[in-house]
Image 1 (spheres, one colour):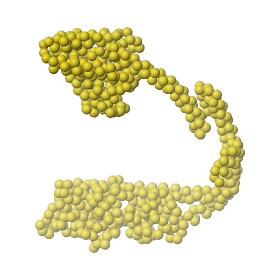
Image 2 (tube, one colour):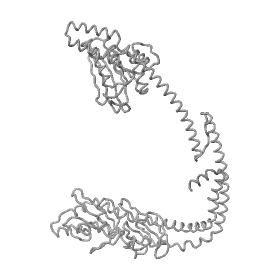
Image 3 (cartoon, rainbow, N blue to C red):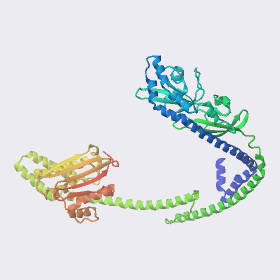
Image 4 (cartoon, one colour):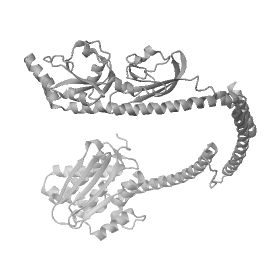
Length: 596
């Protein structure tokens, strides 16, 4: 049924949809607008009464907060009162000593005398040597189990509670309750400041409607009708749960009459809980003139009909026009025009479709460009990989190197024995075999460094003490895949241009480290170095498009393969100080590579 209705609606023309919408949205509501108007003005009368009540409640909140600020300030002073700390923490040896201490401490009485808002001050302590004198009271089991005492011990914030005591000296008034810790004695007590009930009730006597103040447990702590003080909201039976009701206005019954109840919350400063201000008024006298607004209702109905008709016409015209424009743009795109742009304004669905249309055209153009660029880059990389195999085989192990190495082997054979010669021949064979096995695939750092170490051992055999080398690699990257022959050409360059152009021992250091998911490869030597002018020429050749300098083919190929494989930021970097040495370095992303 629902699918059929949706299909029927989709088959209707837009103007028919708007007409049906007009009937459903306007015509039908007009039939019931008479009742709605009467209800509206009735509600207006109620809202005015509620608004005035809210203003009165806000005034009571302000006055009550001002009144409660006095005990709050007193509690702040008593928190750090040295005399109070001494009297409640001292262990008294006799009743006479305790009586003398009580007589000497006058602060509670003085505060009560100076401030009419205060009916009394008490301090509950766990000191077993204290005696109840209505001001300093030892904590008994009943007190420990009381709600207000347990809440006070949880925090040093102020709590406001109605104290429904069953003691010999009951409170039965709103009281400030607060924990007072004594860190140096590792003890604590609870301060209670009892509010003057007459002063609190006096704030509500002039109110027009029945008004009361309750604590978080639902006890009435003050009321215009003083007979309600001490009762709970459940006992008053409003027909709703006012204790858990949030701030706002609700409907209920009070004394058998339908009433509106305004609820607001008062949170005195630094308090752990809040008080509620509740004002109640009957509704029957507020809305008695609501039925006189029928004429206004009829005028309102006519205005709604006229405005709705005009609105439907304008929306129909604007929507149809914009949809036709969007349809033309779609036809152009379908015919292959990728430069079409939709300029339909607005933030509604049609405007969003227009922007999505432009985004789609832009994405198509970008994807076509990316496909072309990716194809060109892959072709370049494939060509470079094919060329590098021949270039590396021709340049990495040249005839001059083989001649010098074999000549050195021959000379060593006459001077020393066969063991060293056999080792060098083995390294040379291993190096040549590795070079011939390299294809266009990948190798690992470990395999690459085996070739480099063989190459350096042969050169060490050739140059003797003139060459020293050191290789360091972090174990985490040994099995990481890399393009082949990206380190050996840098080492060969360090020996050829560093050692052969400088007397004395040349030290070559190869370092491969993993730093924050980036592999740092560095080949440095203390050889002859490069002048700044020559270094600029070398970097221009390495990064340039043409091969004009045959002696730097290996480094140029390494740079090109790195940038083609990993991107421009991962090419070779060269730093050198003439006469002191040269450092060639590059980085590789560790997170994106697979491991063996």
